[in-house]
Image (tube, rainbow, N blue to C red):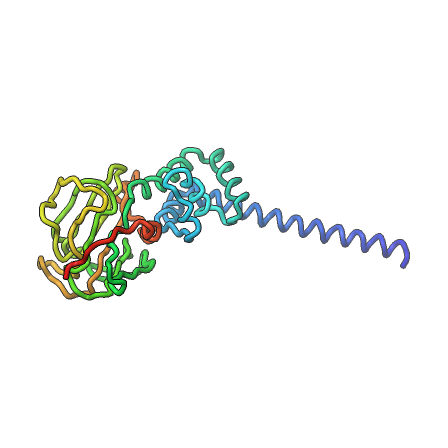
Length: 277
């Protein structure tokens, strides 16, 4: 092989290497741009925060405070490697300090007051609830809309059988009939999270607007009320609890957040109850 051919092979190899490096740099820049735009674009960022999609291993490490920034990084950083998550936090704190602090505070707020799973565990293992991530699934009563909560479905289809307890301390802000929610209770926690419990069969005695509530306190019993303007209507769907979480977001007012992952986190903190005979 003559020297001229060797020279051109070397040139082609060098150009190919530079091309690969250039493409990788472009891809990295695009990833960085997507991450930046996602955090700085408030509509996109809020949509990600509201969906709150977190795997079990991330939730298992969450302590309600120190892990909030790690969760924020997990939601927005495309790479899930610990080193990349840490680097993302550092870069975003420098690039968007106000938005970064605001979003991390929202995560802390969502988890801060949550103490107990809303449906206690029964002695009979066959008496249970099942739920899935139905966030923004289509609902049609009252017009087409996205589902703003999580439905905990009863294995025993008997209204008034399953006790419903308060996830948090707080104050009863709303109580009574709603066409969509049936008999519902809305509790405002100390960190200004609004917890919403809907389709109840009945309320526990003594609970009314302004009542101080302790975490784990009995609120009432699961039912199938709602989907009607006529108070007391039942039977339009199976017995279940609709559980919702709302925050007052600046510029948007009361805004729903996906409660599914909060419920998954709370499964480890489930009270035991003697169910009604």
